[in-house]
Image 1 (cartoon, rainbow, N blue to C red):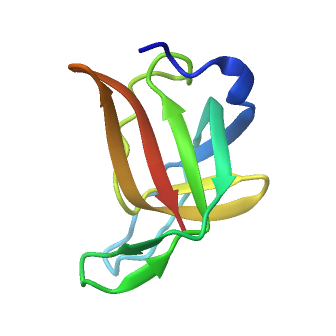
Image 2: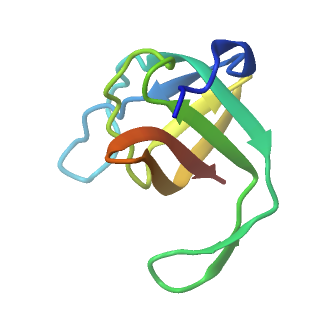
Length: 111
């Protein structure tokens, strides 16, 4: 299966890296985020369940292609924070999708 073409991956997001925390669990400083280019953000109204089995409505889906999105090798996990067009979002669902035996792309549900 061919990679998702860059022409349909027009967006750039920032994956926010959390800062250090003090002994009370408060964030004391913020480190810079990682800019991720050649992704696609699509509005979504899909319902998903969280770890407590509550229904959550996603606000957007992020498509990250394992070939054309940069940087490569991003490890996506629930709870990460991203910023798109100045709007903060939280990763709620990470769906790796395969073509044959190789990882093709991720569909990431955002709230």
